[in-house]
Image (tube, rainbow, N blue to C red; front, side, top):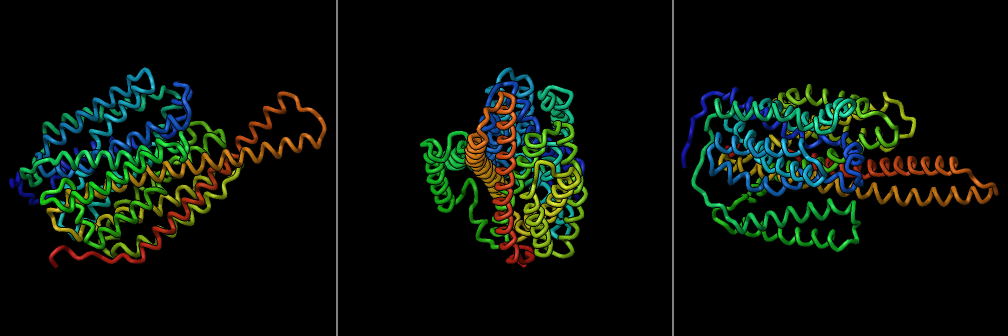
Length: 493
């Protein structure tokens, strides 16, 4: 084992560089949500297909994050970050220049390959740099990156899409990525412990088959339907691959991903809660823009601005929540936050065609406030229970679990919404036809078009409300689990 640098005080300059990289990586998770309708029109594709620019990014991240523990343990901090940022930058440039949807999707996946190591690397540097009694505040600051970047994505996207081509969303990222890359060459130091470990290629294959199969299967359900052999076949292959991967890790002396982190109860509980909440959170970030733009017909700029207060609340609350965690522990924050989140999500099931801007903005902002009280405290509490040498594996496990849960949860909820829309549209069309027959008068082409438009709008609204109801139930499940939280004692004490 080699220790590249003994940390006596927090390397703030280094952490800032890592923050920039992690910020642009997380920003890319939701940056395209508002732009999806525009990309659909440009490439003449369906919503089920265009959503792959989001789920595809999460798919690659979910596949590669398990290997991040190996990379962080094996390679020096500086070289690892420079390589990851160079790959991310190349993917961003490719996406910006993409002439067709296939090239855009390839660029997004290359971006994800580089981004997959950035968050675990930053988290491990912070865990190494701060004593346990100060980790709440430090990780609260990290929450600025983890949750604020995805939260401001729709707002920033809406502003740009209003007056620029969607490719500008990638072009604006390039300078920040290049600056972070150049600064890392100049200022980054090697402070994490490294040792010579071998990559188990069978574990990598099983990880790819397991996580990739599950993500691809669930993400394809919205386009192909749950009865498709590809959908249930890939889910089955993924489940088998994941089971084999876990069994192999438990039997290995030097596993690629140390699954024994789950023997620590607070880490296991924190991981379960964060997975469940990720399902509801990522789905809400897609459902809300869908309502605002497709049901209400609000422009991308105004749609983005309506989501901005929620992003600002998360930015303000994240460091505050970290300090509250240091003082009060995780339980009271998690219960309070999840109650707020569940109530706010329920109110989003009451959306109407003419819901006021004030109602939409207020409920969305309150929901984001609730989420800001939960995620970082439970994650920090779980990590505090582990010995230092397990931190790379714990952060990899946690990030993988959140990415997979977020992607699967989004795919399931979007599929539920699509199926409900089709069912509701069929019912409304039958009712409209019956009404026309009873009236005994033929409708003009304009009247037929107006009825179809109204049916589409009503069915979409019902589908969104129904899906938010499912998300409410998911949030309540996380709330029940939060009652079992206890403040972690440092390992060995």
